[in-house]
Amino acid sequence: MNFHLLTLFPDIIKGYADSSIAAKASESGVISFDIVNIRDYARDKHKNCDDYPFGGGAGMVMKPEPLAGALDAVQAEHVRVIYPTPAGRLFTQHYAEELSRERDIVFICGRYEGIDQRIIDTYVDDEISIGDYVISSGEIAALVIADAVYRLIEGVINAESLAEESFTPGLLEYPQYTRPRDFRGLEVPKVLLSGHHERIREWRLKKSVEKTMQNRPELLETKQVSEEVLHILNDLPHGGINNGYYKGN
Image (cartoon, rainbow, N blue to C red; front, side):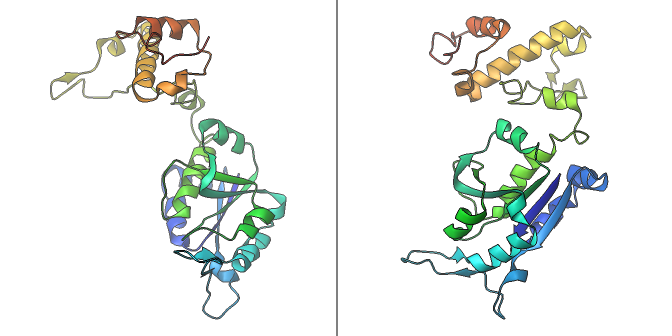
């Protein structure tokens, strides 16, 4: 997969692309990062890429000409173009899985008050929000989306690890432990040391259900859960179903 990132601050993306799993995936040829500096397509001698909004108001808006030049340079009309914005559709694991099937994705990294609407109307396929909050850096938002997407591509992350992550089975992930067995008087649960695979599976599922009920009960409101999960919900100390959290089946 090829990520084309249009940005006013290339160093933010370069630091990420040259580090950790992203760097390894790039070196192996599974993904690539094409970092495009929007200022290279500004038309004036000062390389201005923003201006005051028509109609007044605080802040500046990214100009359409440099953005259009950068988009045309990466042949954006032929690939999926994403603009991360708080005004977009909420990003989810399911959305990441959908995007992971693309061959090329173009990201417009916004700044200031956003980008000229005519760029959105002409080029953008997806306006995506990474959450109900506002940040200053479109680069960071784009990298959040890219990170969630590329790790789903075959050859980047072990398939077994992906299958047990939060949201993949519709539940939050169970707690994890490693050495030492005793840390400041806190011991690893004995079941994880038992070697009994079925009991370990049951324990992990129960903990996943409990964590989901505690932190994200809404995930259980519409999901058709398995009979095993239903039994766990029924056995919760405070009766998760009776408290109105579960509305499936």
